Image (cartoon, rainbow, N blue to C red; front, top):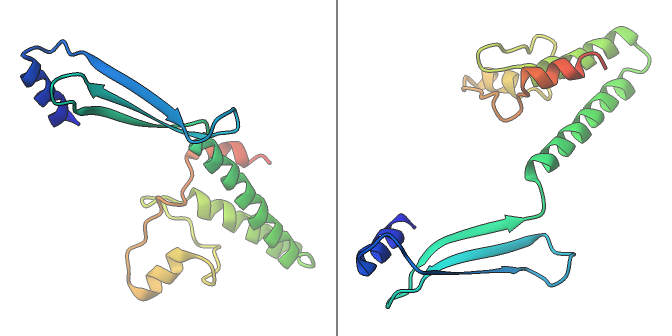
Length: 147
């Protein structure tokens, strides 16, 4: 895109460009979630200067909802699997909490089961394990802890 802008400026001999913009949604009406917009130079040889994808959906919000759903599922499993043994239930719930709060600098996997914990599986294979995909920020974990 930068090359197209520089080329259009060189062709016009100025940084003041006359451009045309247009946008469209995927479907008509208010039921659509996806759209696109484009800015095109109005010189002798038109060039696309910028393209933007638009969405009514918030992917960060969707990720937060999925995180909450996953936590509910994990805690439900911990409770159902250990409903006859309170000590094991507490240990399983804390294992989930500590697993999600682990970082590369501070791994907390002492209570995790090797059956589901990727850290222990990677350790057995002698591979590096990256906590970034599942690690949650400390502020989020502090908010969850009282619950």
